[in-house]
Length: 582
Image (cartoon, rainbow, N blue to C red; front, side):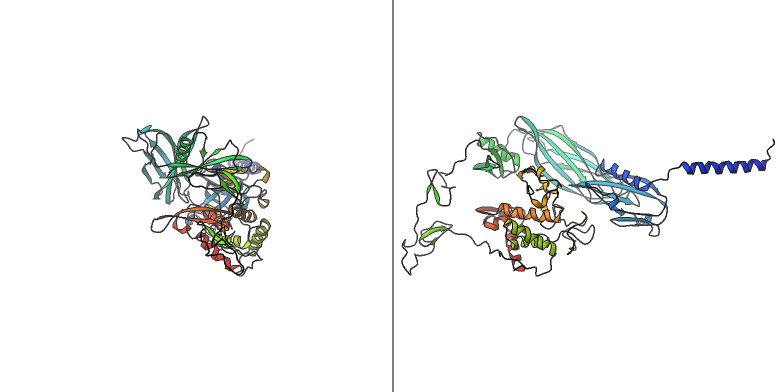
């Protein structure tokens, strides 16, 4: 059979058509959603760094962050190069993406850990900024008698966009011995500003470390920028020093009982770090083995029976029942101390108020009784929401506070001071205290709308701090919560959310758990025993104040030790809010 050129062409076209039909029949269309999920998974396995790929979208499609969110992940979107995001082809906002026609896009992924969730961003346009820590170097050892302890590191921007407001976070740990085991104890931490970094630019930083003690150190450097990810490395070295000097001093506190176990505190002054306080306490009181708490305190188990009465020969401090006093370290029934003229006659006062009474006591009916400082009258009736705050939050505060026996106006005043009754903000991504527009209706929202403090440390209505109360940010049943926790500073404390009804299988990202945790904090620290507030005034002069009753609960809510001058008037500021609800 002969084939003409024309017939060969016809057969060729038919064969090609058949091949195309077969290929199209078996060809699997690309699934862009699957590819997006794979990109997120890759980023979660390498937190802080981006990965990129070209993804073909075979048709117009829309999807939201809910498609990719999970119990431990929150996803958002961003177009980082407007020329690549033609509004006739693609619309991108924080929570959703809409592709208007089939197209190919360069897509980048990056996840960072923001406890308790991973925050993942999907970028459309070009590769985002990315800070990378190239090298971290130091000597193998330093002799502080003759040289400074220095570290150096180089970093660069591996992305296609400039990185702004970059910082380095330096954490120094020192090897310690505890119960015969080596542990790494926090020695110091601080930040260094790195400024801006152009795309492709590299830089180097040399930092002098303030080390005063011999030992082995581990230094971790983390570099980060707000929208350029992060990277970190650790280096270790040994330090030697001939002479060690410290003004750190310690004195033994009083034993106490917690969960049927007896403990005793060692109170430190002028200690710079927790390990210095602990070491000084072990040196001064070697019958105990103290554990790290903070630079002001170390704690040890007290393997003795706590005496009913503790009496210091020097200060005559007493710790007896209200109707008893300490006599030679024994609690005995109080003898009546008369004041004024010592007599009560019909129609007569018993004498000048306070006459012959010790400081802190006043004369009443010729008896010296303890003077209760003015702590403010907390109205115990049903408060009124006069200013239209979020009514659901207002009602929930009154409900839980009343049940727990905490003055509801006290809690309302704290919520007003801390968050203006705000759990959620109206706009996604504008959820810091500096730019949040309060949502007066909603009480539940995604993480990008949940109210944050200016430094990203505290959340929600009662501004619960995740560094101090980490367990409260875990969603788990009360049965699995432990009474004690170790916070981000390595300090041991009570778990604020332990056993709270509203926190069962919830975290403080839920508004009811958040409110209950704040109320529990106030309830726990309410005390009739005066406590010292250590602060510095605006002129730099050191001073102390004493608080008790509900005022000490307020003082401790913001911090018993003054972090800055802005915290000095916290108690007064909260108390001034009470009139809003009467």
